[in-house]
Image 1: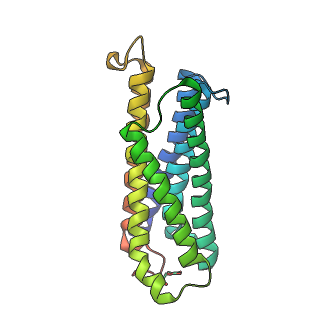
Image 2: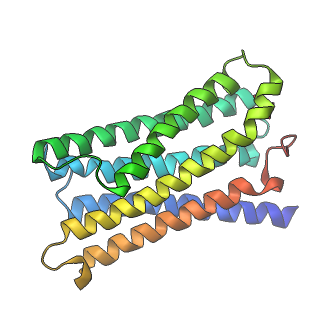
Image 3: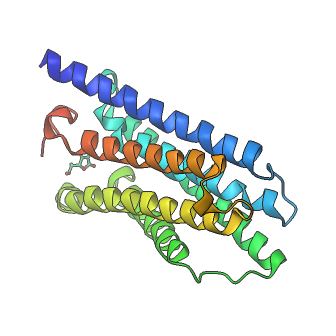
Length: 230
Ligand code: ASC
């Protein structure tokens, strides 16, 4: 049990470090390699999109997914942990929504078409499913109205749906990163492997490994909150 606990802490620390480094990497991408941040209808406004998605939709959502696994919270009330889980997800949703306003506003100002890419289809679908997941999650598990049999019956779908949405966000982020490198790198081009291309490829790997670790931690039955090994 002790070795298992140390493995849990090691993987959690590794995941949190990778998530934090991913945020540092996307900040360096937009501030050092790109045009910085602004709200002017130009490239600096677009740059809020990758930054807020990685902070919210990837890092905060990842933490929200494993928050019930933290052993030092097992003495906290379940209701308190539900508020933290829901609160982190709502915060991530708000950041994702702001990041979408930034891209649509950038596109409309620059006369770039909206919603033509696979990145945009997968990404917007994930945001829509996420809003549904949050509304249903609050209605079924947070408000003291739904009966326990409904809570139990819906739990496998809630868990699966959450992991599916999180995985879709990682996939959408990788597509978005790839698109942006192909669109944005002109001379030298992406295929010429300039420093920005290598740096941002590494960001994609960091996000993927972060996602893999969160999925692993969340799916270990023995790391669940006691009395919830359902
Ligand atoms: C809840 C809660 C759980 C589940 C369980 C049904 O509201 O706190 O652990 O639903 O009762 O799976």
